[in-house]
Image (cartoon, rainbow over all chains, first blue to last red; front, side, top):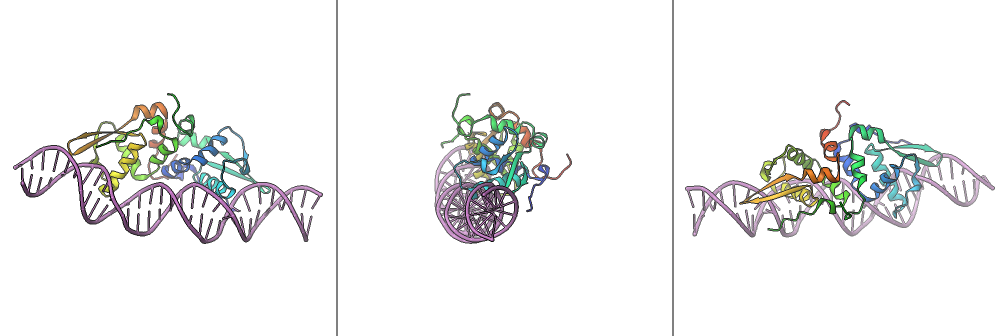
Length: 105
Length: 105
DNA sequence: ACCCATGTTCGACAATCGTCGAACAAGCTC
DNA sequence: GAGCTTGTTCGACGATTGTCGAACATGGGT
């Protein structure tokens, strides 16, 4: 199985931003940001597994996640260091605010 | 003329990111980041004025820009302070890298 | 008043996107 | 091997998006 995982630096800025500009994917990133690896099935955010698979693909191909294959499972983790190196502050800035708006400050 | 300019804090994160996830709009933001006001017509990035108007509307409704009407012209500026306050580091992170990828580091 | 300049709005169009169910692939367990 | 689990891929669909030309609105300038 070919896992397409480009270097983050080779991904256009707009593709990185587009990958983050989706509620489901942001929830995934938010979960991944806790650290560690998660099996794909971990992410139950009210979408079918086809859709989940699609979103994980988008994140992976945007250079945001790394995927390790183990048996029938795949373990996903955030490429935090590279992200922080190329886009310092971006992840924190994005995750600092809740997905739904309208709270104080 | 009603100018719809929401508070940045009331705009969903995904809408802010989506607004930035476009080449033309990123070029506009990049230009605006130099500081000061620019008439809409300033932004000649190979699109028609209808398209330009559309992009400026997206940026404005994402809470990223402020528009001042003066005669037949409109002057646009970046809401840098609010952006920095709510998403510290985001603008710099996004603008630090060129729109097209693939340069060293 | 007429024209010109600056922008917006209105369809229309092709392309992309998010979503799903169904089918498929691959590995584990009994 | 049969069956289950995990996850991907394949159409298909409706919705959204970026783009344009054309029409419109508005405010100068002469």
